[in-house]
Image (cartoon, rainbow, N blue to C red; front, side):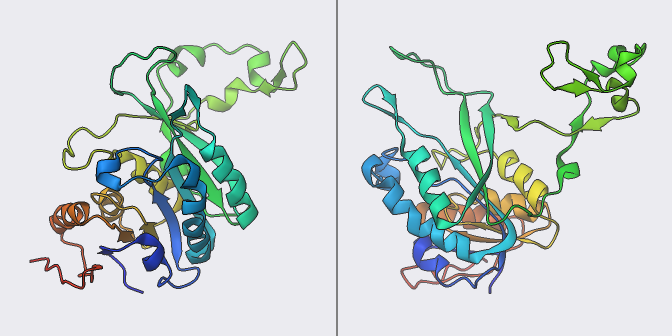
Length: 285
């Protein structure tokens, strides 16, 4: 299996050529239903689940048993209400054998302003985490965050109840031992990721920030592991993989974005040639 390569090819066709259980992490953001039809040629809301299920089936096959699949997606509004196709997709993927292990929320700190008659602007997107089994690779210490300024005052004078697992007064079953925080500089993050959207990549209208795939690559892989993005776009996942010492495989059917990805990755000096769907070789030098 070739590593460090992007194919100018339909992802479903190319996925069928990837060996079984050969990928450690899949992280991707497919075209959203009916969005940017002029660029992506559109997948209708009514056909979205049917369109994606063969792809998720192939991803299930190529993913290692202890690997993870992170799907960045957001349902759009339909006739004044939220569409249900993402929820329907989750349910159908579970029937394929996937475990819907977690849902991370990407909070887009610099989302575009706007005004709608019946809702406010979207400031978040889903990052759905699927696995094949309950036990999977996860390196939580790799994504720890600073404690924060609260610790410098809160941990100075601890009460007796701060030094034990003090139960909540309403008998909710929750409790905490505040003294466990003493001496710590970093803590585990929440499942809400506060990251700005991509502003510099003007050649792709829906590129996610490099910090997004980077976070999941650090969380679910180690150096040398293989990261797959079947909707590579302008190459952001590949660049994140290179920067973190992982190998990558990408697929991008649109010639424009494929060439953009090649140019971006070429600057980092880690890329193999691939044969696109028009059988032309794209030299890297």
